[in-house]
Image (cartoon, rainbow, N blue to C red; front, side, top):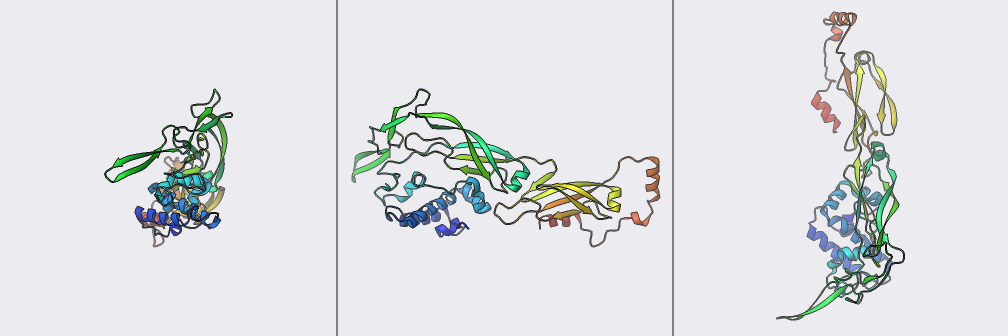
Length: 372
């Protein structure tokens, strides 16, 4: 079972943004690869802490994680998991300050202040529509994506402005003495490389647009508006950069007979007056196929039948919701002479007089039961 992000950083769920940042910096400095060369366990902890911080430092991702847990990250998730060293130093290198020579990182080629960093390509976004059945059972989708990739035959050379460092150093005289500052090289954008040769059909960065088929695993229980991330399937970056990500937004398709409410489903079932009096059985839709349910004689309109476990799986892995069947007795609007005479004769019949007892719940009690 995957470790809780709060436990990894050693903070509580009520921790402030500053407390989360301090906890991450403490862990990152402790397990920094420059401090623990060739130590695989330290490297794993370093990545684990960065993954936790990536989620908990972002208010939207943190909210999603608090609501859905690790299940939300299956199939790519909102932005956790699969981080490499380039991702970490590209996003969080400033956390380390000057603890490692201005933030530079010798072992993996990333870093800030003293060395070349790897530029990350831009993200792509796509929206997919899922049926209620696909959401309930989980599904794997094959998506056609047009992304920019490095053109075959493109070559790069060292940037002459920064000499391949990705940054340029400036020295200025102040009243406190000489101050040295570093800024991203404007010529190469921080990659340390510029185009040497490229095909005629490539753009200024040596990239071409290519259509690819990307497989995305959608976990059961996703909700409308949720966003999953497929790492490395966005646009390529020029030179030795790393590809961006593909962000997949979920859109839920309306079901013809079922209505979703959280993990529960609702079904409106209409039965005739004779069926309500005599009892019957009806076939209804569920997300796993049709099922037949029994309707007892004397059923009252508005009764709710609960089919446990026939709803949507919780994205947190806490079981399944229920299917709530709302019984509606259909009253005929027109009658022939014989039918009208029958009901006229039944007006004073004791069997047709309303006699609610303690077992008959009020409307508000039924609504309360729906959410219990």
